[in-house]
Length: 202
Image 1 (cartoon, helix red, strand yellow):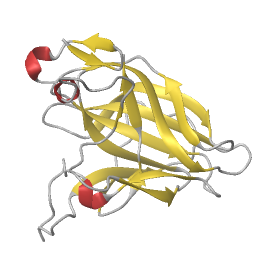
Image 2 (tube, one colour; image 1 turned 30 degrees about the vertical axis):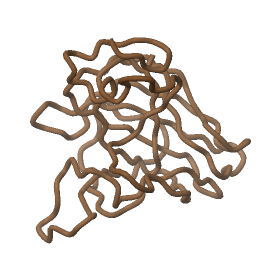
Image 3 (cartoon, rainbow, N blue to C red; image 1 turned 90 degrees about the horizontal axis):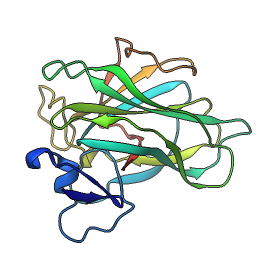
C-alpha cells in the first residue's frame, strides 16, 4: 500500500504511476496532473471560452478532488467546469465515457486553487483524459502546460520535430453539460499551451 494524500490505495501490483510516485516520505496533500518531464511544467496564460481542452492522464486509485489554478479572475459570473473522461478502450485512446464532472466552479473571485469534490475510481493501466471548459474568457488566466514538457501519448507527426509531440485535444463547444460519451471530431493539438487540471487521491 502507498500513502496518497493522507489515505491509502492499492498499488495494483506496482502498476499504478501515482502509487509509484508516492514511495518513501512523499508529503500528503499532493495534487497531480499530466505526465511531464523535468523543467518548467506550467506557465500563466489566458483561457479560451467555449473550448474543451483535454490532456492524457494515467494513475489508478480513488480521486476525491479535481481543480485548477486561477491566476487572474474572469468577469462577473465566469465559471469553469472540469471533468475526467476514460479512453474508449486500451486500443482506442480517444475520450469516451464521462466518469467525473466538477459542476460549475466560480472563476470570478479571489485567485488561487479552485477545487471541487469528485469520487471516481481509476483503473491501473487505463488512459484517462482531464478536461477544462470555461464559460467566458475575459480576464481569466490559469496555469497552462508547456508543450515542450509533455509526453506525447498520440505520438509525433511525420516531421518528428523535437519537443513538439501531439499531446492534447480540443473541441469548440458552447458551454453547458459535458457530452457523455465525448463528442467525436476533437482537434489534435501540437505545441500548444492548454489549461492545467489537477486531481487529488483519497
